[in-house]
Length: 282
Image 1 (cartoon, rainbow, N blue to C red):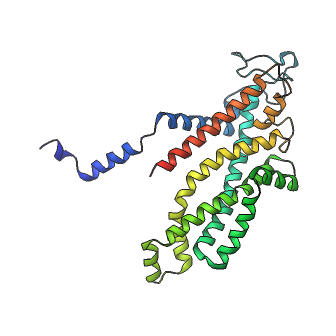
Image 2 (cartoon, rainbow, N blue to C red):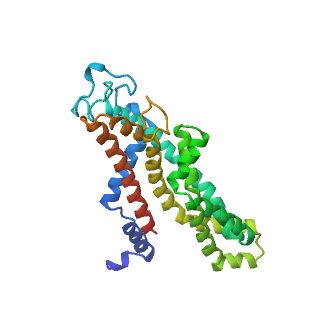
């Protein structure tokens, strides 16, 4: 038996797929950073033993050290602890924003692209109105209308992302609707709703996943910006944007800004890198 004969075509194909799905080191590092952020948000007490609200006044404004990795703030609170406990709010609010954008925008794009006609025209005008307003300005308008709160900031960010998901879903639905298997299903007597949910939606939604991952990182930035401007939860909350906003008032102690800003940037860049990898992966 030769070496070549020991490999069946199916086994060669499986090996080729595993090779194609090999994760680059940069992407693996990005997954590790995102996983750490998620772990911080789920179980912050496992990563620090300090109190995020009550500090020791005698230890205020200490620099980074082995005891306080990110230093301490003006009230003697461990900044690393504040960042860790603030992850839950930042990650959860960004997730809320993505869910709102995916479901609302995806539904609008799905119906507009599949039914066309006056339905498409109506939803297209709605999307045009949303796109005419800058995304951050729209988020500020919505959060001002419903109240200053991190959850409301997440809702506002999700509303500002509806138009983006609607346009992407609409274009994918139109492309999928013209596929041969969809036309065959029509000829075989399939109802519109059956074809919509059974054939069009699963195939059209593949492009939404990388966009949702990308929007997750963008939502973290938008929500942090809203918190920086005072549209989120007030102190003693520890949202990343709020920590940066508080730290800017103490220019002689730059770690108060650098630490939460570095965590925010590292998380967002990691999410963006994962999104790019997903777009290139079949």
